[in-house]
Length: 413
Image (cartoon, rainbow, N blue to C red; front, side):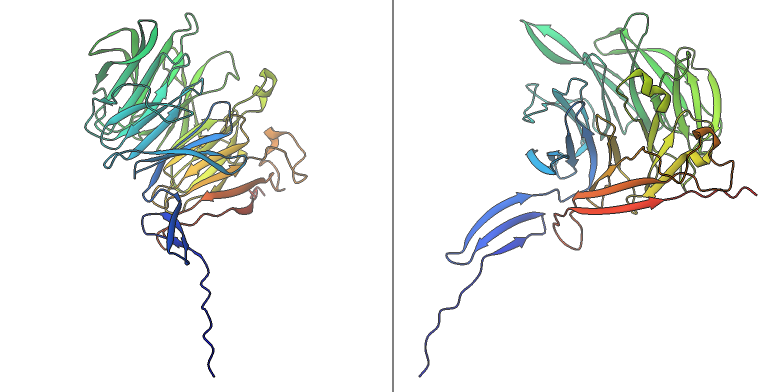
């Protein structure tokens, strides 16, 4: 005699080709969407200026905000089809998030809800917006696009409300813009704006004399003869003279006087197979920590750390492969504990823990690195990949902790 036994079907998870994950209840065939991850390249990341938050933007039009201490997803927004996120930047107060898109649109979003702060997005470019930057007082925002154009937006007070308005734009470069950087005039505390292009031009703009549809140029300086610049950053105040640090395609770093734009020093930079593409200075909490500054850099496929001041010593740098297919973006946490890298087409964001404590391998002063045959200190990094969609699997959510130890050896006789 055969008995009819009921077949028990367990619930299961479905991953789709568009990076969505569903929970399927077999009894009743109930389909519940769990979450959606970016299905296209991730090039835009930005860390909050005083909270452990990171905003991640994808070409599919999605912006997600994570708590990187808790590895917890907080909130997100998906823009309409055709809007791919190319660049993201928090303003210094952490209240706004500037977003540049692949088709030229610029949004100013509320940092805690991702709702628009402007009635209509700015649409003054027809090409991808590659850079977004805010001034120190959040009164100005500047963008750069693939068409070699710099655009400036300003805050106006109307009817007692702060309103963002378009000010002016200028096609100031002949080749791609590598950096857009705000600074501060020391005598007046007014913001200053600079742009650096692959055409070897460093351009400063006069914001006070700019008006509607007219962006005034203050001065233009040539930075290189043969090589082209790749990025720039304000150098920490380690000396009485203030500098701009500019890296170029010849593996050199140059220090330019911030006022005269005169090149004061040229040194060998990190040499790890390709030129530096992005740099950031680790933040310090007190003026005493300025004597122990560090610089985070990325090149084509590596992330590294350099001890400042720059002096050409190759033993004061360390680097690790982070994205073999290429690095698309980089940022540093507000407290300097972590660096983040975006992998572009590999659709991953990797969190790196920065360990600045010297291990017993080196007990001498920093200036003596590389002068003996002993090993230089090693930088221990913790790699945390908290979001990793891939081509082989539509979506993979993982918490991977990989400890990598990189040592530099001296070959001095």
